[in-house]
Amino acid sequence: MHFELHQIRAQELIREADEYRLAQQARTVEPTPRSMAASTSQPTPRRLLAWLRG
Image (cartoon, rainbow, N blue to C red; front, side, top):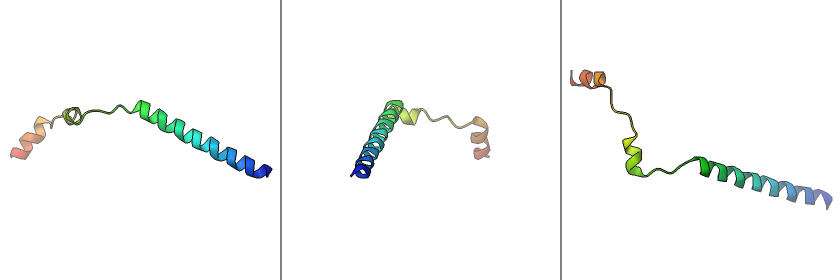
């Protein structure tokens, strides 16, 4: 009985830690609209474009 209570409490603590970690990750990751995500890519260097043209 005593061991089972420890197991249950350990599972609860693990579950709470997982929820906390996921909440922290959700706060740090800011969702960006798809239109903004496409505009943040860096332009192709001019040397590469000239090399591709030949």
